Amino acid sequence: MSELTLTIIKLGFLAVLWLFVLSAVSVIRSDLFGARVSGSTKAERAPKPVKQPRPPKRKRGEPTTAVVTQGASAGLQVPLGDAPLVIGRGAECELAIDDEYVSTRHAVLRPQSGAWYVEDLGSTNGTFVGESRIQGPTAIGSGVPVRIGKTIIELYK
Image (cartoon, rainbow, N blue to C red):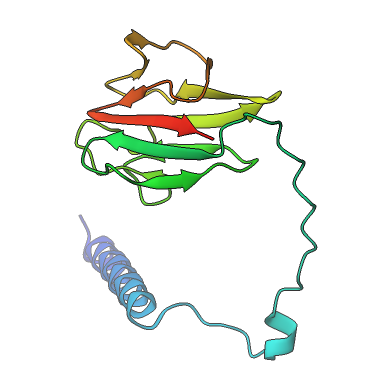
């Protein structure tokens, strides 16, 4: 190889090395100081309040609370609303259960046509209603045990 070729290769390698170093410094800087925020005023950044629609009236006898009856989180109660209730070990779940046999997003309780349905979200250990492992959305009523890992959840009025 000629001397010119070797010098071009060395300079190219040096340029790539500096690009790597600068990108690493940029990542460290953003981790330490966070992202830059534009200098807008608080009034421009404040979210405007949204008028919430009134929830529909519940039918008489429909469950209103999910209660953990057995397991590490026994006694935990979560009110049931009109939105689905995700059950799992993850912090983003509405019903977070501290059980090593529960997946991060294990199952969901969903209201539909005046009844509550439980559906497994592809968990490793499955979801059981009574003694049966469920394969799809399954209707549950008040007092019916839903087993997720070593935890049992029941719906109550």
